[in-house]
Amino acid sequence: MYYWVLLMHDEKKKISLWVPCNLLDAVLSAGYASQTDAVIAGLSLLVDKTKRIQNNTKEDEIEKAEMRVRLEETQAHNETLKKELEKAGQDKEAIQNLYNNYMLQMQTLINQKAIEAPGTKKPWWRFW
Image (cartoon, rainbow, N blue to C red; front, top):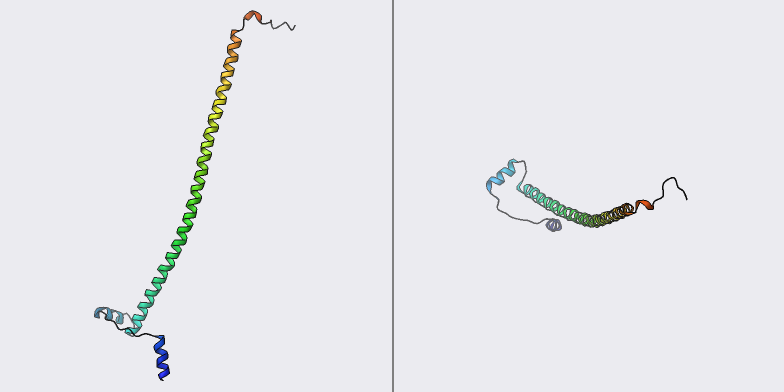
């Protein structure tokens, strides 16, 4: 029997605590058979709550890491889009310059045709 007491003593610890009378009455009226059962149930709930909080914290850290990765990808994509937009602006400017040069050449040709003397042209019916 002494061995059994030692074995039980290793598996459990005795605690003593002071509990307000109204809380103890509420626990006993809630259906707990003894004060020990109520304290064990309360401590179990506290441990479960702590584990859930720790798990949520780990999940939150994982979610934050995923969000950071997505943020970095989005920032890289934004930088790429900014470079493409800048390149498109430069292309637009180059095309505008090309158009302006073409129009300037056309205007120069029109002006040259207008300056030529009218007598130097052959009539339309002469081939030679």
